Length: 198
Image (tube, rainbow, N blue to C red; front, top):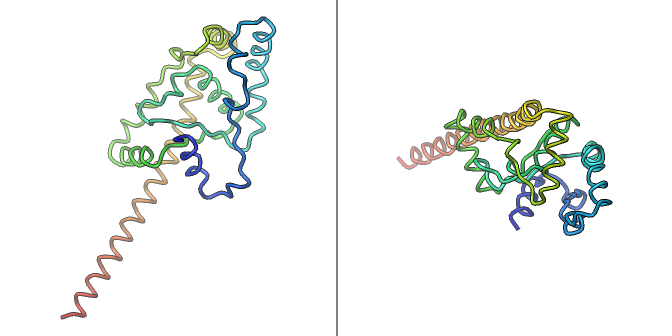
């Protein structure tokens, strides 16, 4: 419910009848993928090494749902970190979907404590991310160690998350300016009305 609502808000300015969202949980047989069969492991390795990121490059948007901006669960999940890395190397801007209430908390924090929000992102620990399936975790860690390196992966992911945060900060500034302008107009209108009464 929270995920669907966040996506509806995120794509609020789009024609929802023409927007299609791919969710792996609806497309992947999770029990079958975690049964440990050699053929399944081989296919998962192929998916990890080229298929997954190749699919990301074909998407128009890359959106990840954060249940919380301060301590989002996806940043603790190895597959999610791998997806974020895939978006980064595919040059797909990372977009984050938040619940309206959580987005407002984040906007308020950006306005008042910009450094704190920045450090919350800088503090992520991709190497500590976990998987439901231990074999998946071992496979991802081996792939990162061999082809990327944890420092590079973190740098790329953090860079894209900071880019998203900067975009949000700019939107917060515009919203704040609009609020000030509206308040000013309201105050002027009240002043004129009171003046007419005297």
